[in-house]
Image (cartoon, rainbow, N blue to C red):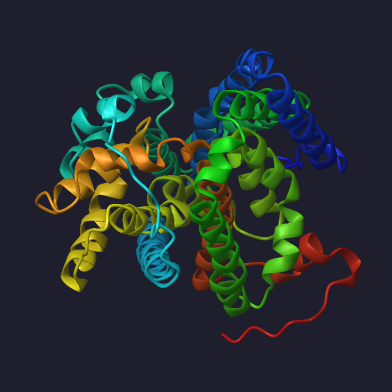
Length: 426
């Protein structure tokens, strides 16, 4: 399948302009800005419509052309190991920043009105076992109908392995699926033409609905989170990139269209198809990209992990509640499990926060999550962007770990003709 990166060089400029116009409209005309919500929601639904087929096709074709099916399991295991290490590190960094800066100290908190978050408090949290069982769909078509990434990935892996075992008999079907994939990426190219419209609608609604006032009210927490995420990407992910023989800044430039797309829509899913396309273009094997990126969207949420511990530290400080080192260790341990169970659930962030606070045996009232409810929409943009870059770096690193990263293609994609020679430490 001929892979072609969707979006022109001017796409990110168009999206950026649309974001600015949307923000101005939402600020000066809040009611009209809120009316723009269907534009953002419609664009996100357009992208989600093709995510499941693209993942299925990419994984099936990649695995069917592998001679060694055991390679699939090895790649998946390495990806999970990397995810757990990086998300744990993100949690510790978020906690460290929260304890060092103390953004919640001095905040005057009145009586907690938990009506706006009651549905998250009362929502049954999905256990780890329930989360793992949910990966297995009741029928093959159910996962495609719902657009659930992990069940689609499971079906794709099984189907790809089955086709690989068929040898020449399955080659014809693989070619048909490959051509279908080219058509789906053509659909993505068409959808990306309305990306500025989607970003405009989403940003106009966000500013019109929640207002700039929420930013000023909890400005220190927002500032801490944005700066910490930026440093996490530049330093921690930068170190990981250096281990592969590449650099983080060229990668950020390479993914600028995806950055602005996620910034405008507050959803990292909108960038998933083009992210997979670009990672393959820069030398990551197709089956590895097809496995690692979808897995990362459920298990490698660096920005979300960082936010959880920072938010809990903020809440405890705002309520003047002292938590011991053992309490914080318990929080990190619980989050390692609960964050996976709620990764793909709507409102999963608040459900996870509520479930985690409940394990502290009443030290912090669960309804206190209302303190960060008003600014969550603004925080979600930074979480999604950090998750985007985290999954891009994860895929590159796993490809390097596998010894299958084409550095010549990577440098050509990242630097063009002026690619500097960087020796790999491996």
